Image 1: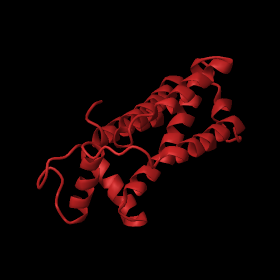
Image 2: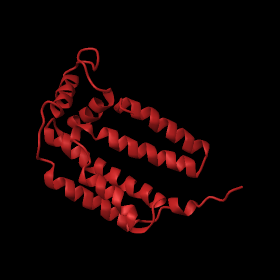
Image 3: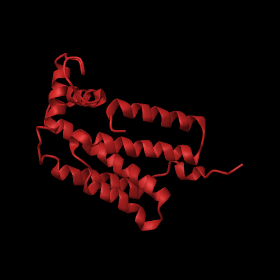
Image 4: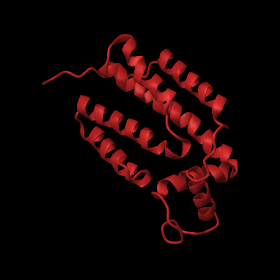
Length: 173
């Protein structure tokens, strides 16, 4: 039977990973207020406003997948219904996406080349209203890699759950 290296999934603090996460948050915080496209970004915000007013998604108004509206409505309830709330929500989520990309690229690439994918991702992460797709792709790849590395029932269940959860947010997959 093949012996698996469980040491790579231990609970030690990974300082370069933490540095990438915080650098990513600081980098995105610089320009989160710039560029508004009401034809695209406004569709999500107006849908969330309609949902918060009591209308039902895909019954009372045409919409994207409902997970986008539920997640943003949750943040609007807690932090106020502003465009800044929607954009500030994506700063830690995009930073998590960059950190997971680094985790994956470290396992697939060697040395300094493993920093290239997360830095490219941070260079052009996508519009705020469309970051569901890259985020969920990276999270799905993470769980698929865990399943390939350690084929246990728990990892299979997590991978299937994440793939199913993705359909709730993004129809592109």
